[in-house]
Image (cartoon, rainbow, N blue to C red; front, top):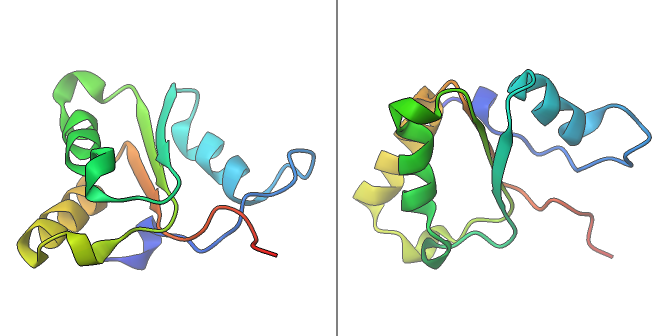
Length: 103
């Protein structure tokens, strides 16, 4: 999986005009943004989210997946399938790191 579609940046102060939030808006290029964020796990619907982003009628919507992901509950073939889909989707960005600094 190419690291160009993944990031370890943190969400910035909204007044900064840079960082991850700015990057997501720039990548969306004016398209609506649909996001799934937080502690990412299978039960949050990773497969459904990915399938929605893959649907031809959703090409004018940008999908953002952000947060820690629990890979241990996802079987290896499914993990590979998800990562391959994420890498190939032009309307998708995955940031598989915490979104906030922890104290």
